[in-house]
Length: 256
Image (cartoon, rainbow, N blue to C red; front, side, top):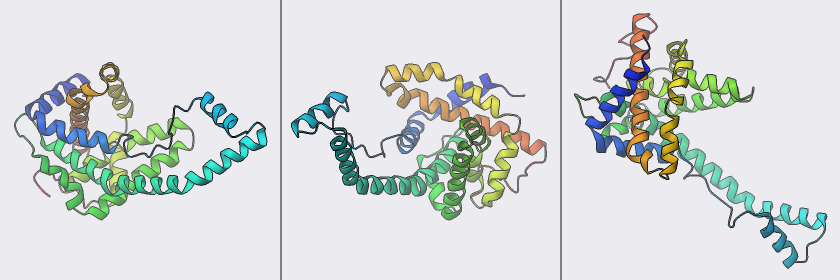
């Protein structure tokens, strides 16, 4: 049976048992999937008064002149914006996504009985890198396309692909179509439960905001990641019981 309280308690115990490596893996995970890689072209406060002052300084008073200024500014920044987007996309595709698989491997291996080494995060890069990149890319692409049908379908599909990085962490050689299909099958009937589990961390996220992210670094983020690993363990066990998958397809933590 689904037991959110047990998932969270077990996850907390697991990350505390290997605290500093767990924190290190989680910090890098948060950095790669945060906003630090986004280029910011806002050089000032962005307030309307700044724009008005600029226009008055250069004698721009008409709507046509203001429109020209905006168009000219955009034309100057466009090459940098395109370069920044391309760089951000490349880092996400070739670094962040494979790292998510390696971090998932670390989270799955780490228990109160076994302290996983930090080096396990390299799995996403060292084991069938091309397949890992392709599968993770398709996961993001399909989620985005579903979001175009309004936000809710994208969220639902995103939760349907919850298990993909963990599946790749166990078996990086699995075909991309099968990984996506298997994740949807494993999360069938549990997407709402996973969503509620995410909501259960809302209080911690508020406290994290009040501490300017410090609490997230040393407690909240590792707690969340460890809990999600426990959710995957549950989904994996149910999938085995129901014959959705097998030990040959998901060999566990000892075979890479």
